[in-house]
Length: 193
Image 1 (cartoon, one colour):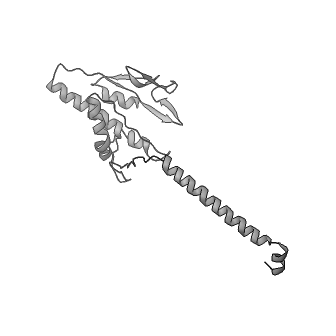
Image 2 (tube, rainbow, N blue to C red; image 1 turned 45 degrees about the horizontal axis):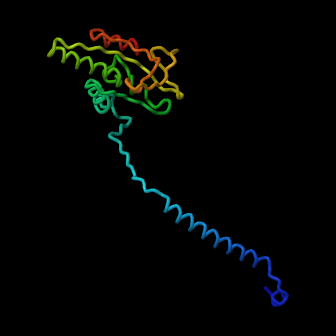
Image 3 (cartoon, rainbow, N blue to C red; image 1 turned 60 degrees about the vertical axis):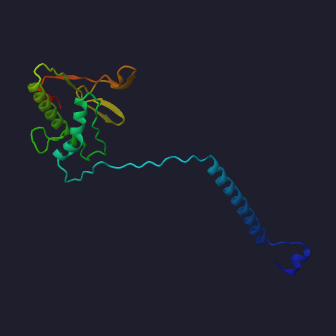
C-alpha cells in the first residue's frame, strides 16, 4: 500500500484478499474446532473388533486338508443335532465348485461334499454296528446363491425363498429335499450332484 493510498483511504485488492483469507481461516478454524468438540461430545467409543482367519489355504492345499479342517467339524456338529453350513464364496473361476464338489471318482480330487457324504455314511455304519436299533433318515438339498438369487440345483425351476417361522426358525421354501438310503447313498448322491 502506497502513502497516497493510505492518505486517501484506499486499500489495494491484494490486501483485501489477504484480510478475507485470514478471516475465512479464522472462521474455518472456529467451525472446525466447534465440530471437533461437538463430535467428541456425541461420539461413542465402540469396541474395536478384530477378525482373524482360522486357517488360510493356498493353491497348494489339497482337498483332504480342506475337508479335515473345515468340513469334518461341521458334519460332526450336524450329527450332534446342530445346523451346519459350508459356504464357498468368491469370484467366478476361483475354484468354488472344485472345492465343494471336485471329482467324485478321484479320491485325491473329491471335494468337501463327496467327502462329507463318505464321512456321514461311515459314521452311521459304525453307530449301527454298535447300536442295532438306531435308525437314520438322511435328506439332502443342493443350492447355490448366484446373482443374489437362491437356486435349487436339483430343481432349477423352483422358486426358492428364505422364510422364518417361530418353530422352524429360518428355512428355505421351495427347495427340493431328496431322501437318501444309506445302502445306496453314495451312488445316489453322486448321480444327483
